[in-house]
Image: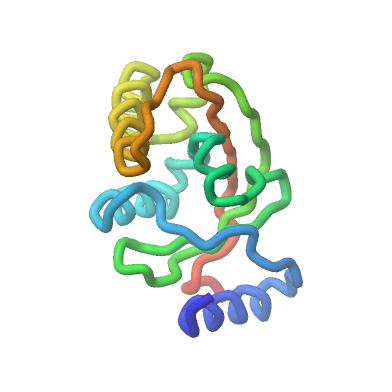
Length: 154
């Protein structure tokens, strides 16, 4: 954890009296612009879910998130922006994504068609960087969360 991240976490704990430690510290997406775009959706309350490849968690030697986990979310410049709490996790093939999940994830026009297109492109980019191939049968971690803190809160 960087000093800025630690300072934000310390403030979160002081503001909320929540003694839990972060499960993860990350920015959404795979670049600064996408990170800022998705963060804005989280902060507005539009984005309340995310999806990641189970294989990525395995390659990072991380367990998938679980209900009650807290994550410190960063902006596109790597600065702490908010804390989210995981509320639900389902692991299922990519092809099992639903209209309801796509809507809650809050991206684009919130349709399943948009979600599939955007996430296929994202997962293909991610796999290409790893030298692997993405399959629509691959298990996905469908995570739902709620925004619980921003630095502006008192």
